[in-house]
View 1 (spheres, one colour):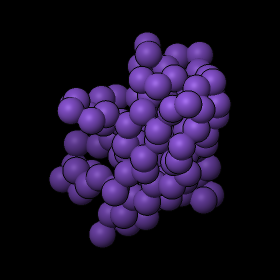
View 2 (cartoon, rainbow, N blue to C red):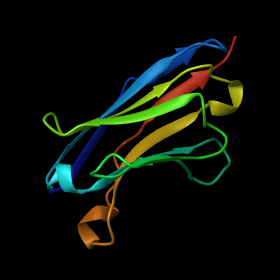
View 3 (cartoon, rainbow, N blue to C red):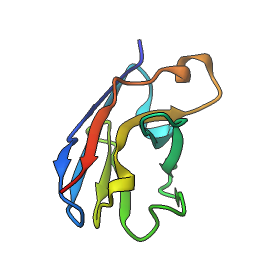
View 4 (tube, rainbow, N blue to C red):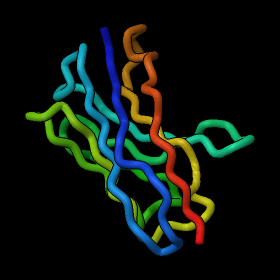
Length: 117
């Protein structure tokens, strides 16, 4: 059974930093592309960043230069380092395996990030 457990969210002031973690289990983590997504109140879930098994990375334009995605295959964990946070980064952040198979439809519970003074 696929499990994705996000953690590391919280309340931070504008300009601050947070690092999110996502512990994955139930599938072969090392060969799968992993992604971070977010959903702000009243908005649709949106793409934030992805990292492939070989380390190729893509970012949404809104986070480029501020966020860094990384992965540790030994720990089955993907990270999102977030710097220079803005109020518009406030959202619930989710990780997901990017794979067309039915098992990859699972989402974790998400972790809340609130950027406010």
